[in-house]
Length: 295
Image 1: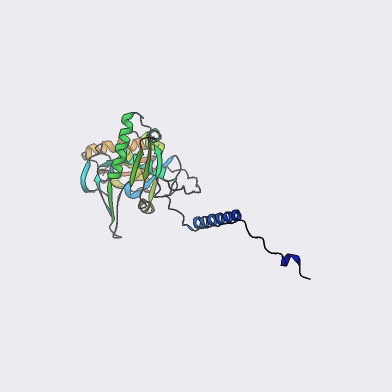
Image 2: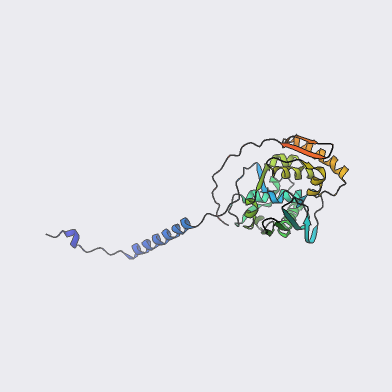
């Protein structure tokens, strides 16, 4: 005898059930696409109290020690160590580097190429600057400089080059007073070539001593800094002072770096050879990075 379940006609789905099924299938396809999508590129992670920048931006006179910040109007060759050449159309200094470091610090939470949002007030506060109307105008000018600043780096041995604005673009919503900044994916190329991490609190304690700030990031970009002539440091930092004046500035800057805890010792020999020993940096806590969605 045939089973009644086998002969019973199948119930047709209602219109509403078909709509719901279609929605479920569309949702499943979207989730599958999300799963199949390759992870978005991120900058290397660093902790809140640190900053990190590519070595190729720190081992030369790109961000020099001069207080001047003029626009060259053309690409100029800058002093750099052997192995690569660096050119820029803007005279950048440690003030510009501080701004770039803060932007990169914000970027590390987002995929490269995604827009990073922040308020001018929060940016100035994090930098320890005043927050008046003039300061906000200065910030807008500073961000414009970083977008305008084109950098060309050539690896001589590998026959390759990098030419890009330091910041790809930025915008400001006049109603909300929120800024949006975007870095090019090419910035990741510079990090992959090597980067340096350093303590932000130590850097802030260096105040307006641009040579001390330059030496901090220069030595941070070397695991074990090798001895160098004072004249070489003078050239690499973009200093324009006479060598005897630079030696005086150098001693003051090195003493400052030791006072804030970046250096444990330093010395300048009779033949002008500068040797330093860095204070060991505490081990960083590793964090599992989650890609922030593109804005």
